[in-house]
Image (cartoon, rainbow, N blue to C red; front, side, top):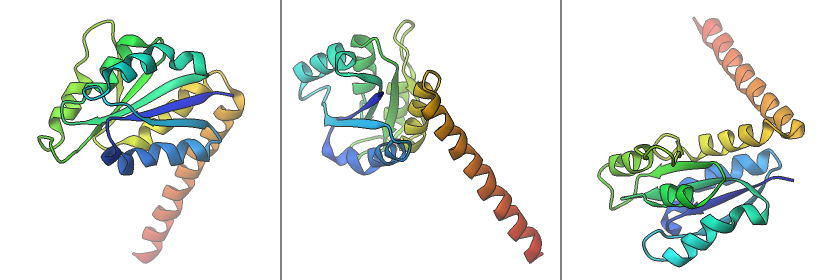
Amino acid sequence: MSKVGIIMGSTSDLPVMQDAIDILKGFDIEVEVDIVSAHRTPDKLFDYGKNAHTRGISVIIAGAGGAAHLPGMVASLSPLPVIGVPVKSSNSIDGWDSVLSILQMPGGVPVATVALNGAKNAGILAAQIIGSADKCVLDKVLAYKEGLKIKVEEGAKKVREEQ
């Protein structure tokens, strides 16, 4: 069974990152959640990045605010796909510093980047990555997307009926 590692720079990021945890649990994908600060616990960061794949993790989702070095540093150390979630934090410049820190990675160190506070999409992307090799997860992603389609169609029908 595949597992997704969800890490964040501090506990203040958890309300945003909870969306990734929830969506992955909805797909019955195991998650491992931890606080790994690029600036305050660099040894833990190095250990996590170098060894996550040995613990059965298939994808890493890393959320960080402010300077947001966590996703890029983990990606530099890990052979796994890393999805960065820029978090609008109390010390950020309206979130743009986080977005650009995660988005503007140098060649050779890719980080898939979702929208500011976009942890739900990070979880869905992680499920899609896992689903590319796991039919059970793929079927759940397909059902989720069908549910989105149905919700939109129901909303459209309601709007038409009210006019």
